[in-house]
Image 1 (cartoon, rainbow, N blue to C red):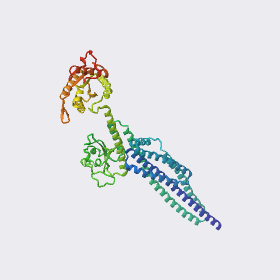
Image 2: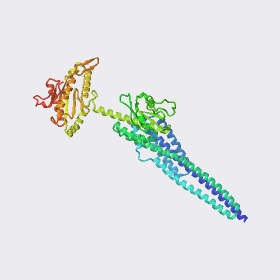
Image 3: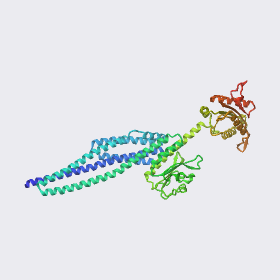
Length: 564
């Protein structure tokens, strides 16, 4: 019995020792698995942050985004090295880490191409790389990280099962010892209690670690959603055709992107003396949107940087916020700067102090808005240059030839008339020779302004070429067209053109008038008839209005060059 008791005691002691060691090993490996999972998530989070900063720099060129990118990419490298050390015991995960490092390096090459393109070729080249990066359908880094997390989850289940199995072995050993010796049973019970306590402490530690991981996962998910919305906003803005369409996009995109804020987007007018709100949102949005301010009423516009700064607690409140009464809540004004030009300001107000992340998202959104608005302004300027005569600001001949077929179709659909008035300044070559070409340009500009003032909004005044002008009158029959032509001719003869320190001699103008459908139903026919009527006005002594009705087959064809 003594020998049997000794054997039982030694067996129990050995079983408890071995089981406890196995349990501690399983617990240690379980903790190791959570650490590996946390390291993987941390690497992915830092890579997403570096991607966001690379995109921000590619879109805005802000130095702070450039610096933050290098800080975040160094953290990614550090995380990859730590992860390689932690999975050194697992050959499959070691191979996966190598693939992950290759994928991270590939992403880093894409990021740094954006940085290099911005510095070497400017915002347009970098913007193209940003769009290509956002448009990638797959993310190898995320896929590899997901695979590693799944393998670690499998290991975690196996190690937890081993821990449970070892605990069960402890209970079995205690039951066997109870049959042989009460003391052994008591010892086994005590040991089992201690083991359970250690297991509870381990489980509590695991739960606490899991709770710590949940906010990180939630933050990563929110950051990913924010990046997706910013990318979507940039894509939509780049495809807008005009400012009104862009404002409509901004009205829909900004409230979900900045959900806890109220705000207003204000733009500077062409004279750069008034800043007027174009859209607003949130509870304080109507107050912010009602403000019509001068550029000096906003500190952000004065300084061309966000106001107040992240740590500038003593910064003064913008005068336009004081005027609107939005001074009780924390506020932030972000200037819309693009290529050295200030386009407007994004004014924000929140019930609580703005966090660093909220400021970062708002700043990135403002940079995207500034870039898109600058592009729209450039497109509008190019469109204007393509259809306007730079000297008179009237439509040019190209616009006339492209628009007249459309106007004729409208006139036919409305059953209304359409008349063409052809003007020619009399003796303009002599005017240039006596007064100088600069004076001739001033005269052309003055007559162009007179022609524009004499038109309705639906009419089409154009500079046809040289000293010839054309006016297309919609919904006007021939009689009304002749009356308008006579009024313009008379006004031109009374035109006072100021040049340098004196006044130029008043010009005279000859006018030819044709009307659809009496004199033609095509643009070419109407212009030809109006031109022939103009030639007849010249033959009649100039400074006259001639109608296409009076045209007869000329005895002598019109010379190749018009009369001066």
